[in-house]
Length: 242
Ligand SMILES: NC(=O)c1ccc[n+]([C@@H]2O[C@H](COP(=O)([O-])OP(=O)(O)OC[C@H]3O[C@@H](n4cnc5c(N)ncnc54)[C@H](OP(=O)(O)O)[C@@H]3O)[C@@H](O)[C@H]2O)c1
Image (cartoon, rainbow, N blue to C red):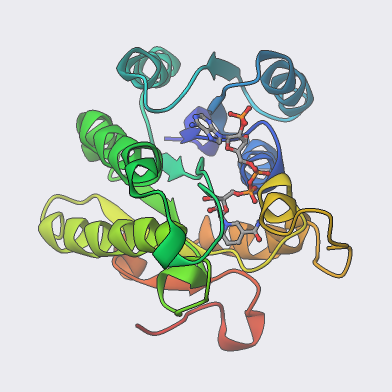
């Protein structure tokens, strides 16, 4: 198979980190399925990516919507299959002390940050198996550190991390690989939402992770499955041991 026939699905690719990942894949000639809720923003991203990608199929909608997830998988199938699934779309769900957390908000946060990625992995598995594909799940240092105020979001990312490691172990003999990537702090809308009214201009733009993505997509997926990477820690060849 030539690289130009490869297909990747990136959720939350209308801006921020997801758009940087989609750009990296486009530069490598992948065909892309991209997702996001804002129709205009997604169309603008698709128009930009089309300059490099072999083909781009934008799928508008919330990743908690089963019809949206099915449309993403259908779009990949129509493009010929799926080599890379990137579960990037995520929500912060508010930052604040646990003792004042409105626990019913979990009923939104876990479906977005954990449930939807898991269902997408389930739906994508036949296509990924056919191409010995790679799943990339975007996590956060909030999954492993006890940052005051970040508990609910961090709990969803911790859950995603355990599911990813478990899936990688379950798939060891199936030829499908799964990795975790902590992108590090980046100047994006989500990060600004976490620090409302604060100057976050000292954080790098998500483009800072581009060298990592170029490296990752050069790796043999089966040699890195189950690993967790920190995209801004090049000194350690990006590998962050568990
Ligand atoms: N920024 C950081 O410092 C940082 C640090 C660690 C980890 N991360 C992780 O990096 C990933 C990307 O974050 P980011 O900072 O790039 O955020 P962002 O700029 O807010 O972008 C989020 C993307 O996801 C989409 N999205 C959000 N909720 C969605 C939903 N329910 N359904 C469909 N699409 C949805 C957004 O588009 P719409 O709003 O139009 O749907 C957008 O394209 C996330 O997994 C985040 O947890 C970020």
